Length: 185
Image 1 (tube, rainbow, N blue to C red):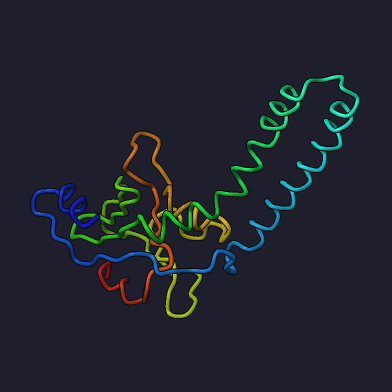
Image 2 (image 1 turned 180 degrees about the vertical axis):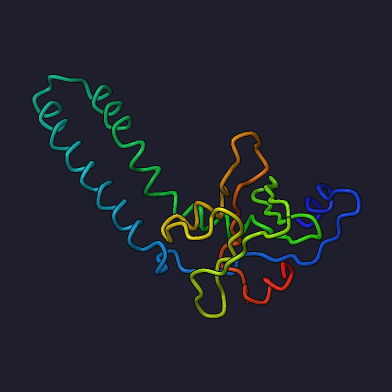
């Protein structure tokens, strides 16, 4: 990851700080409600699917392959939404590097950089502090709902005209985020 950071630095750009998200609980206070609701909705969709397709299987009016394909299609989105928190946690803890340079705020996620230029009047805030760690928010992600924190940390808040240039960015669950604000004073 550090090698990737060196590759993407601009001419004259100097790294002031690098860090990674600290390990965190999957069911933290900022995401518990959203995860539980997603799992409940997924369970309801599963039950409804079994109730609707079960009689067809028992009566033999549809083939087993038709029912399996229908079940996979119906459950695809709920399963993806249910698994996403686990994938986001793994991505953040194992495949993410953050950096503050003299020009940009950078997040390298799974080897892909996203960044936000540092400019005069850049908005910076610390949100959801817990055990000395918190989310360091930049730009338009400040004040976004807590349940979207991990998604914003993994994807950023993209601008309409660029894949890498962001309107907002979040360093998720970093150690001592209040101290990092000094780089923007």
